[in-house]
Structure formats: C-alpha cells, structure tokens
Image (cartoon, rainbow, N blue to C red):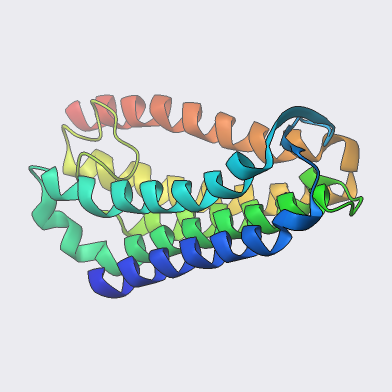
Length: 213
C-alpha cells in the first residue's frame, strides 16, 4: 500500500464518518452520549454538533500523525522494510474510528445494545493486525516495542518483536473470548494488552542481559 493510497483512504473514512453524522443529526437529541464506562453504561455527554464532528476530525489527525511523524525518524530507512504493513494499520485505525462513529450514532438514535460488546470484535481485529505489524517491524524510533534495550541491539529488537507479534495475536483471541462474559468484556480486552505491554518491557531487558553475556 502506497502513501498516496493511504492518505486517500484516511480522507475517505473521514468524509464518510462526517456524512454519517450529518445524516443522523436531525434525529438526535441536543445532548448526546459521548462516553461509556467499562460496563457499557453512559457516563459522558456532549452537544450533538461536537459529537458528530469529533471522530471525523480525529480520523484526519490520527492519520496525519501516523503517516508523517515516522518521516522524522533518524532510522526511517528501516521503515521501507515494513511500510505496507504499517500503512494497513493506519487505514485499519481510520476504519475502526469510522465504525466507532457508526455505533455511537446508533446508540444516540435510540438503539439499545452493549457498546463494549459491539467494540469487542473491532478491537480483536485491531490487535491481530498489530501483531502482524510487530512481527515485521524493523528497528526505528516510532513504531514497535521501543525500550532502551531493543533500541540498543538489533538482536534484542528481533527477539522481542517476534515474541510480541505472537502475544498480540493471542490477545486478539482473549478479546473475543470476552464476548462470552459480557459483564467483563472490557477487562478481557484491556487486561491482556496491559500485561503483554509490561511483560515485553521486562523481556527486552532480560534478552539484552542474555545478549550482553
């Protein structure tokens, strides 16, 4: 996937998200739900104009940051080795936000459902593709598991990312498992990600010590 194609798809998702919001605008109350807690209960509100504009703007802002910030990387030459996989994540993130816009609007139009459960499959897909990206990532300062030890050793980087890719794919499976336990779906989604993230930090230190010896 090229940079041009990625930019066009991000813009397309932003426009579609905006059009979806504008179509729903006349049918929504003046104050709409904008945030839910871990149990899918509404606990935050905003005006509907902000509600329909926020995600389209977030799609553009997130896409711009993800596309252009890595160009400042001193190791940006390494990005060429996995650029296609990375751009797929950029587009996937835009699609994820577009999906979030859709279910947020549906809720505020009166549809009743468990929002956390509705998000669970989307997060599972996102985690799986992040795992694929992590496995392919070459050493750089913006993308991947960047610790003092992975950035100091190519071997430690490769070992940590090989393990990290498999763990993030496993995290996707745990996330889907949460659909069997609706009251705890959020914890099946967030718990494994936090555990993996902290675990990989310690693993990279361990791998570096092994490599040093």
